Length: 114
Length: 111
Image 1 (cartoon, rainbow over the protein chains, first blue to last red):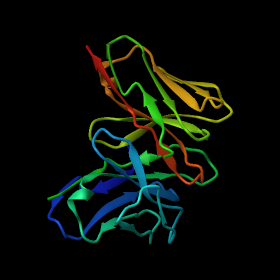
Image 2 (image 1 turned 60 degrees about the horizontal axis):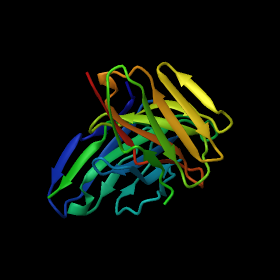
Image 3 (image 1 turned 120 degrees about the vertical axis):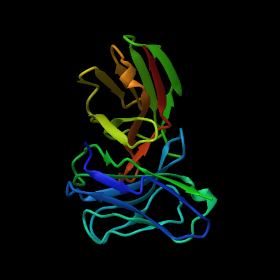
Image 4 (image 1 turned 30 degrees about the vertical axis):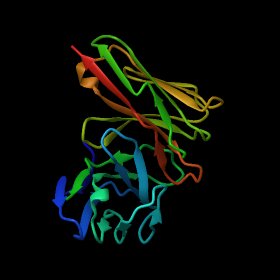
């Protein structure tokens, strides 16, 4: 069972609301990632982090922001949600930079903006 | 786009048959990985094949890698209904900072 947790599992909110998607891992992994995935489609990297106080934008432009104040926690925030943000958001983590290893994924947050 | 391409997009087979999925990338492959995703869930790491390896086995999974063709294949032998899922290949982006995923193959195994 993956030791990476995402909350909420499902979220339906109105346009213009501010939301934070939570992601926590208990494995002590340095690297963490956020991917966006529309149903039946590929994953797109939107943010990643090498460690505490490190955040980078991914390959897909996103209006969201992230923070990494603690190793285990990597929340994603949308300041003003829009219907175009409706998607599934997947958080993942991996071990040290120089060791090729698989990612551990959370179960995802399915966001619907109405 | 650096995204990979899986082939076929969808595959339907009977239990006991083998399933073969292929993926190709436009950029050079760096430590290719295969993942499985059950409907609406997160991805689960299946197997990693390093750039200097040509073939790797794990249980009923067999992965091959051809770095010159920038392609890989995943073979699932003696498939089961529980293998029904989407399968994605992934390799690192050119900057080496994170994995980029293909579009996935949706496998349906009927009993």
